[in-house]
Image 1 (cartoon, rainbow, N blue to C red):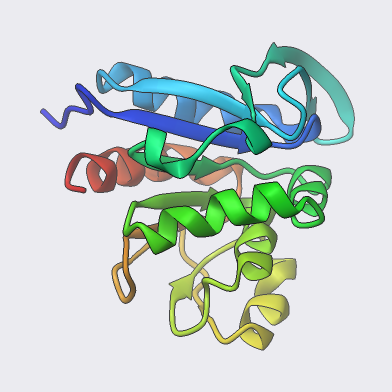
Image 2: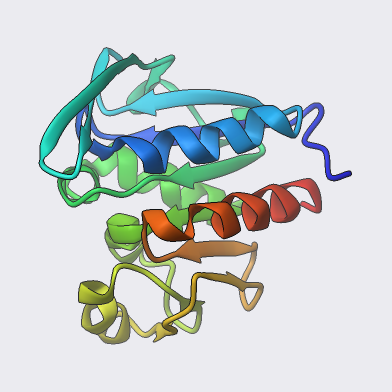
Length: 184
């Protein structure tokens, strides 16, 4: 059995727009593997999740991104939604936080539109990723190879990068990120 015992995983989101299931399913996978999950947001307050275009639940962030360091975490998860990563890529502290995981050689998992944050962080060149299909050109323009697969684990860089396309792929995404985080 794969375990994340003793590992703390940051989940980075904007204050509004995260696709709820892309936050809650990987969160549950981390908890079920014995890890600790911490919600980091752009303000550290309330996070409004969505079910596509409809408001979902609200969650309380454990910390604001400008008050934490990647050094405090073992891995990073970037949930998707359209509005969430679009807001994150405009937030300098969020982009720097994501980049710091790569600089430290720590694993990162991103689903759906979350690759926009990775593109902004400048960490996709030479990597193979998957994402929501509309990001294919964005990733190619940033120097990445795009693959239409439920989950891609890329180790062609300083750390494992686990990516997935959409909510239907969440079971494979959760399994892959837990395995990669356990092996880091």
